[in-house]
Image (cartoon, rainbow, N blue to C red; front, side):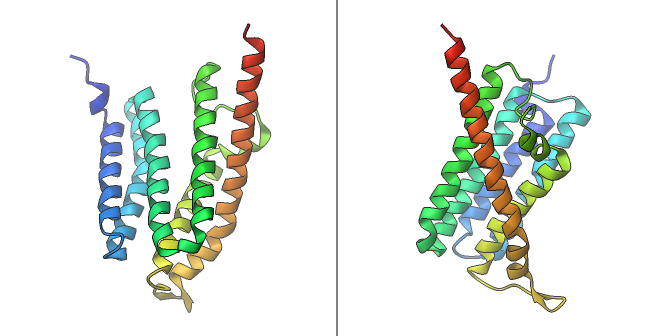
Length: 204
């Protein structure tokens, strides 16, 4: 009997990621250490599910969507938490969420509509560099660390490491990485929107 896609190991890891993220949100206002720890663990497992899919031959459309939805919603929910601690920055957080959602969903839909096997198959030069695995890892990890460091800074500057406050240092180092990822999100959204418009114009 064939194993249900629901029970593929990468998808089981995805369910654990969701559970960990919600544990983090549950403690977001009471114990930032728990939130930081479980949120980062959830993000680390993001790499594990992709590796498991390749090694075990358990790649699936369901898993790809689960992975993207988990990534988008976990960041969005963290932005909701950040808005509590930084109410003056609410317009900025909502803009980041909107850009993230629009760019990724337009891109995913355009890829599927145009017959792409993966949303990472791109012809745009900027996006080709962005989706190169080492660059993509640094961009995504750096952006998530930026969000986490900003959250942690609402509670503490962090322990001193080599004479520097850890959370503040991580925030500063990751700021340009996060900014570059937003630029790539804009490019991704524009390219995807243009692809959809061109498809509409070709369709009678």
